[in-house]
Image (cartoon, rainbow, N blue to C red):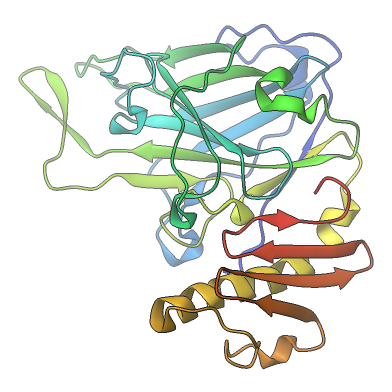
Length: 318
C-alpha cells in the first residue's frame, strides 16, 4: 500500500465561532477549501463513486470543525437511537488519530437523521483491538440539513449536509493544536443501493454497501490509520511529516511482512532477509523475540519505531 500517498489538508484557523446549523454560510467555511472528491476505499483499482462527496475543515481554540456535502437523489435514514450501528444506514464517518501512533484513535458516524455513534479503539481490530462504545464526545455539536425531502421517495433530492464541532477535550490530554501541528484523519461515506417498496426506501437484497473515502485505504478496511490523511493545522506545511514518509513506509513494510511471516510460521522473523526485505538492510533495525518485535528507522527528524501491534513512536509527538 506504500504506492498510495495519503491526502493532505491545510486546515485554516477560524476567526470567529462556527454556528452548527447544517448551513455552510459561516466565514470559516467560505475561507476553507474543499477536499478532493471522495474515491472508492480501495483507490483507483475500483470505479469512481456514483455520487459526489467532499468535505471541509476548520479549527479554533475550542473545536475542530468538520462539514461535508453528500450528493444523492434519495436521502433516507432509519436509525434514531444514539450509538446504533449507524453504517447500517447511509452515513458519514470521521476517524481521528491525534498523535499519529495508530493507537487510541476515535471514530464517529452520523446519518441523515442526525443520529450518531461515537466510539474509541485502543488499537486496530486486526491487532486484537476492540471498540469502546461507552466513550462519549461531551460537548459535541452536530447538525444535518437535507436539500430535498427526507424519507420521501415521491421526489428527487439533491444532497444532505453534515456539520460538526468536535471539542478538543474529547481527545484526552492532546490539547489545542498549534500552527504547523498535524493529526491523522479520514472520512468515509457508506452508501447502500436502495429501491422503493410500498412507499418507502428499502435496501436492494443481496447487495453490499459501497465505501467511499477521502484518502484511500488500498483495502476495504478503515482501521488502517497509517493510510489516513494528514490534517495540518494552519497555513504552514508539516514538513517533518512529509520528509519522514519514507521512514514510515519502511516500518510498515516490516509490519505487514511480519504479519504474513507469523501467519505461516507462528513466530516472528529475526532478520529482514527472512521477510524478503533485504533491500531495507542498513535502513531498518529489527529486534525480535517470542513475544513480539520492534523495528526502528532513523532519519533526519529522529528515530521511528513500530512493534507487532502497529504502535508507532517517533520524534516529538508524532
